[in-house]
Image (cartoon, rainbow, N blue to C red; front, side, top):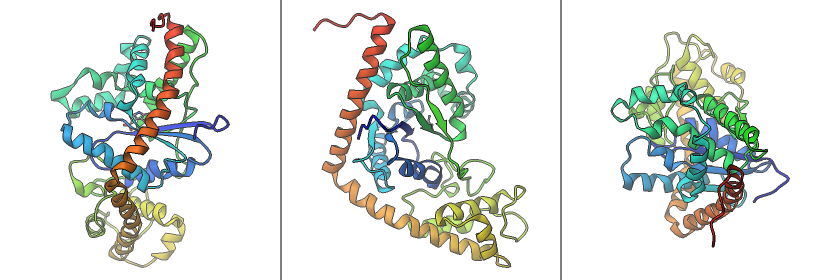
Length: 335
Ligand code: TRP
């Protein structure tokens, strides 16, 4: 698992809402492709999720479900480390240290904080504000070289790089400066009803997203209902975000190029295309759900994956944190 020769890759998803096609095509699919060439750590960031109100029983269930979905999508616990953030106490410990070298101004500039403050105006808590420092801790704790993130997280990653650099300059070389990894295929899956915005797993309107656990029938129905633009051609076109989004999804799922799909559906109707797309999504989801159902029922297997993940992560995290504590001038506790 921990292979010194391989670059370290780290990413994570918040256990809120339901994992959707956007998460798979934009993130998890790439993780699966990178896990052989990288020493990979995949987090379920339950501590981040607390920045918006959660139902405790549901959060607990969702964390396990996300882990099972990671595995069902092809993350192999034998190759990669799967960790629940709260299982490794060093995340919050490093966060505290990093808090003291982060300025209020830097956090104030974070667009996600501004957006979330608007969306959750009744609950603008300090955690929402310091969220990016915890994310930096997630990354720097494991000396990650590469961090696959969506465009909306680039600013947070930039802060992580700045903090690593600042700490290294102020004390001495300690942290690897992480590089963002922006997927080549430009996989940005958009909402089905509102294709100007990203498909989000936390969207309240479930017609906007196809979740990885939607039944094939539900998935087909959602595709049928997806907004398309006026016009009838099945062509990639910036001025027609609806059909363009569906084309991108089909291309990513089938592996066929956009150009070949355009040729395939020349002269055909939106409804023809949607039927093919709906079927291909259903076909794609079926084996994932099959594997998911197997894994989620095998509690002892899930437990062993999480124990192993936590143990491996804890060992690595402690190594970094011990170094950090020494550098900032903390005395090691007497034993
Ligand atoms: N903030 C990220 C998001 O909302 C999730 C996240 C937390 C993350 N820690 C991370 C992503 C570390 C990459 C690396 O998408």
